[in-house]
Picture 1 (tube, rainbow, N blue to C red):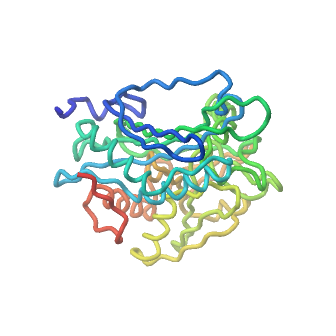
Picture 2 (cartoon, one colour):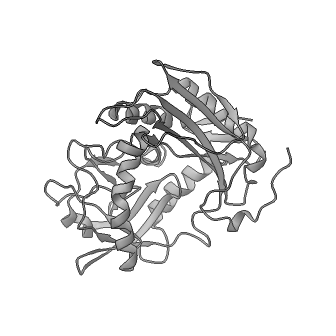
Amino acid sequence: MTRQDLDWENIGFAYHKTNFRYVANFKHGIWEDGGLTSDETVVLNESAGVLQYCQSVFEGLKAYRTRDGKIVTFRPDLNAERMETSAIGLEMPPFPRNRFLEAIDQVVKANSDWVPPFGSGATLYIRPYLFATSPVMGIKPAETYQFRVICTPVGPYFKGGARPLTLCVSDYDRAAPHGTGHLKAGLNYAMSLHAYVSAHAAGYDENLFLDPATRTYVEETGGANFLFVTKEQEIVTPQSGSILPSITRRSMLHVAEHILGLKVSERPVKLTELEDFAECGLCGTAAVISPVGRIVDHGREIRFPSGMERMGLVTQKLYDLLTGMQLGLVESPAGWIRQIC
């Protein structure tokens, strides 16, 4: 295949059809052999479980081209583990972890000409997902399922550099106590869309969701975990059973503690203590770390000392280390980088 010649810095974070995707079906209690296909269409019965009762989970990760021309993924074993947890939580048959990794490898290899060049700021975004396919009418789990992996090149999340975000404290709840907030299920993201559109209409970049039980503790945004930095350079991340466990956050905490030698804490974080922090950021696959400059709580502004111009110093160090590892510029802990080709 011929390397695609795209304007990598301007392709945006959007879907571009690539050559191949992976498909495997679950029937009669077993996962059948899967494989690559060039057909991007999905044909479903009108009463398929995914359409009627939202039985669907997904993952998101990236493939990177390193300086020496290799193509790698970053900690895909944790994506396999998290998808298994999400599937079990929605009474879906988990796709085997080893086959998950093999499927990722196959899709990336088959679409290697779509992996952006080193230094472009662009990456190959990979979306594994699992959904119910058999017809259901009564409320119950489906009997058949399909696992797919698609990929698309995406441009740099921050064109022209990271701009600190402005968030608002949402009046909506993202997830219920003892609900599905800790699972990467499509239904969780559907629930956040109205709040997201409302925040944008009001001039904010994202929502800060509070715990639904007491509405006093910080949870997350619609698609990313929070990280805070104290004036003493301690890293603090909110702890709650309804927060999605971010792989980026997990990696960042390890880097902060074991490489930068910083103190790390995972604990409940009250909304009232945010003004005591020096820096704030959001952790996620798309941007790695997005800086937050201010949070508005119904007219009351919380401005972080790191400001509205650039990332805070500690946040920038974490960002540089994690992206350096992903691109092969910084040595990673054993097992974090999976070389595909």
